[in-house]
Length: 211
Figure 1 (spheres, rainbow, N blue to C red):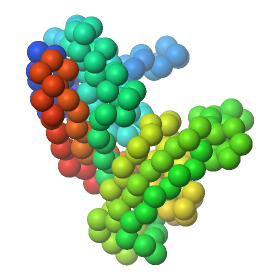
Figure 2 (figure 1 turned 180 degrees about the vertical axis):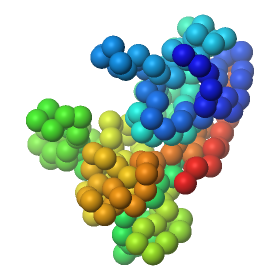
Figure 3 (figure 1 turned 90 degrees about the vertical axis):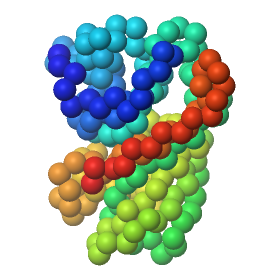
Figure 4 (figure 1 turned 60 degrees about the vertical axis):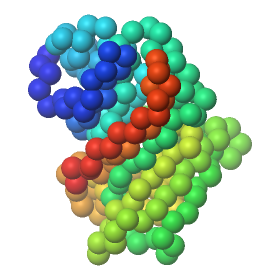
């Protein structure tokens, strides 16, 4: 499994900051044909100590953080759990929101009948909060910055769908026009800030979207 297509943005004795390409799993899937993934490629190509801290969806590209020792893994995982990290995503969404920014606070849950989709459910869903901001308006779509406060699966995709602006190229949630508007899911983890697991120094990494 080659390390090609994986850009290492930063190396530290305690962690790695990677630009994950689209169409690559963060961790192995259950099926035999889903074993190729980011963590396996790193472990088999010079970083056997790499440990996953958080995940990005298969189709989502951008910044992902990996630890290089158990103590760093424990501390970085705690920061994610306690919401001490800061994250921002760049996305292209269908249509033009009336406002230039807003918040979406809708509870989400996994929907087994339509797996792997998630849905808004006010009775059984888990709390989810997203802030959004228009960066650029471009005809039938716009570029937005999405800031998730919680970290639910498919949160950004379902939240933007819920306000009538699905992400371009989203094979799970976009309508036909939005799906055909781009060849890939237009969702990219463009910024991550966290505290160094050893020194405590506040760090911020940015990676521009490829779309």
